[in-house]
Image 1: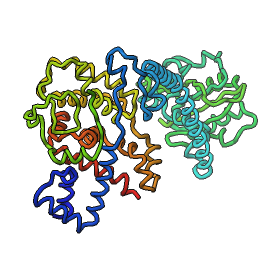
Image 2: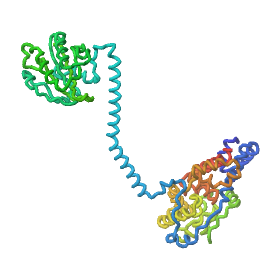
Image 3: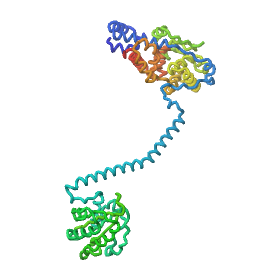
Image 4: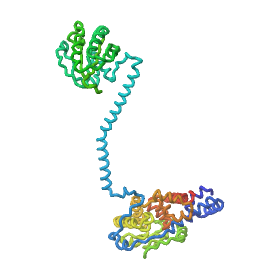
Length: 304
Length: 203
């Protein structure tokens, strides 16, 4: 008999039910194997401990009246936490209240957190845009207008009428005032209301932008006493020339009238169509704060 | 006459003399003893029709002691005993073990005790387990044998108690626990091996 066989028969051996040659084999193995002998001693000790446990008698009152005797309260097991020992109806109420409060807090705080995140994101974006434009300007001074708001610049290059009007920008949706219908003289409405934080965009279509450029520069010099010469002379951009500067609010209407006069007549056959409009304008609100009493004017001279 | 549960070496020796005499074999003894005898071969036959009071008188001590040993609490043992007594009263008419009353009582006791113990049995907490395992001295560990014993699963505890504390034969335990005799022997061996590992092998 080897150790494995002894272990499989150890239960019978302990009970004394192993008889005959098997018992002799087991005895022989125990004499020769110290490990199994040690196991045997341990098992004997364990069985003795179990059989020598004290025994309790049924309490007399429970014996006499098993169903009516007063019993002690249920002793809660020690492996239960204090929270588990709280009655279920209180626990459920607390948990339900907690879940409801959590949901309400999430619903109320969600939009606030989102707005804070968006503000931070926009700030980072505008800072980056400012740094980018400032750093790229000396190298490519004519590739981009010197504007602090790059989005506005893009909007200027893509007016809805000029490029088919697909996918209007967010800023274009804020247009407060538009140029009149084709054929209508914008100069007639000279009483223009110019508010704070206005960006006026004038689009002039001509077949010779370079010829119109000095005229506009001269016009602007009349309104502006001391301004950046680069801004007054305009910036070459792909597809045209752009002027972007701050002018007094009172000068906007005069500027509009003079630009209308500079605009060439519409091409033949396109007089009453949007494509034949050589001068258009619109006004939007600036997201950035503009100096009080001033309005931002962006003039775009487009090549027909 | 109340049953007497005296643990002694006699119990082991008696069980070794006539160990596996099951309910079927015990019938031939013709003993009509109403007491719970530690002699595993002495099975009480033909006890159907006895009143609940007589059943409690006969097996009450064994049931209560088994409950207290497993639940590790006298208070909870009283509650478990009442639960078992109610079930005995309810099932008395449908006793399918009419000829083997003790087996039937054990079966009802086992089922109810298992249900009750799953919810309310006291188990050593993790802190107690760490504290127990920290003891290096074997004699100290043996003094805390109860704590180690209650770390066993409920089935193993009941099996060891029925077999080695009360000296019941395997066929009777097998009928009560609805486990085959071979499985009972293996489980007992594994339980002993587990206890041995806890008590000795960690040193």
